[in-house]
Image (tube, rainbow, N blue to C red; front, top):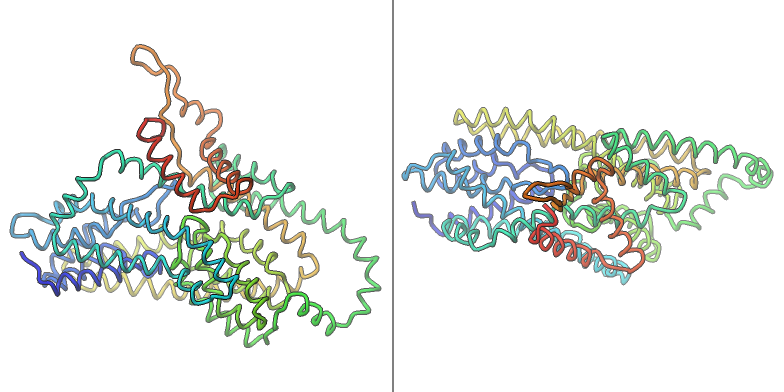
Length: 541
């Protein structure tokens, strides 16, 4: 079956649109949806639906990678598998065979995605430089660079796959196996770069014990991220209340002086200190709601340096412009927002609403950043567990079963059900975050130092635990005699110091940033070289 140029172009456009679903959270990048679209374009909806159902069920667990791994990309079966199933149908190739043929493409496509994330890492420093110089259009372009690259790469994948499937298969065969294996190893290590970057911001001398708390909780006790956050919060609150008791005497001594200040003067002092043009409650709430639905843009600039940090600053851009009329203050607030961010998009409105409320009440950008960082880990864990492993599988299996019966309603039910539910979840998150932000600033306005330190304690413990679970480094070094292993280093480490290699590598990245001033781009490049090289010589698996 030969495809026309128009069909090739349409499949390219469709692939580019669907690939952006990886970033926007609209669930367009699902086999069920992509294959149905290919079926419509090629005039064989029935086969497209069948291929979508088979691919959806096969790739059901690949929505979120675990342990820092790089899972095959569903564009493989969703687009290329559907093309194979439809065009080679007369040759006896069924949807199951097409699924098998599409798997190498799924792996290759994911490596292309990794390449985009790696390239985008180098844009973070340039985006900060653009903000510093007041070149805001350039900043916003870089903050959307990843999604622009996704659209371009997606179009090329779809167009080339439709134009010549055999050429892609030959291309994969040209890539040496050792390069493919090495890239897989590097992909498992890359999360260490982002963790090291954020630790350079959060760690201080009094916070170090919480690094050990997070490590022990994850490595020896096997606690999930929410459990680590709760355990760290318990110890952090003990420190907080002890600090508050110690500061109570000082507060009593200063009470007479404080009573001489009127509430109006206090507000003026806050405004003079932070440069915030405080909004009315009604205007602030409207601004918070608008910002909440910009959560769809959270991964538009995703990279391996600060993950969603660049996009987060872009999401906050319009709101910060309203809060900071002076360009100098606006630039500083925007730069402070370009920090590490990793959270489920559907719970992002909790962070953005707290951010806006606390800024409007006079909190510094540094204090609000520390509070956000402490909340990210638990919100990411809750959001991924709820959405990816609870809600999505339910709608996915329903849609796939309908598609297997040849019903176009299958992908439609999946798309509409998921997106309507998640839009409601974003609205609920905004309301919750706004109330939390209001309560926080009213009750703890005079205790921001201890609150900020408490938040960093929890955040550091969570990140330390994530290093153990999300950075995957396995060594194959072993010593033996007469063909038998007497001593395997990895087994020894797993018994004595589980997670030691991920911790050591993250510490090495931290050292290069803090002491040597390495950029994130250099760190990612070093990680890729080490992953490929050490895998090739048999040091790393």
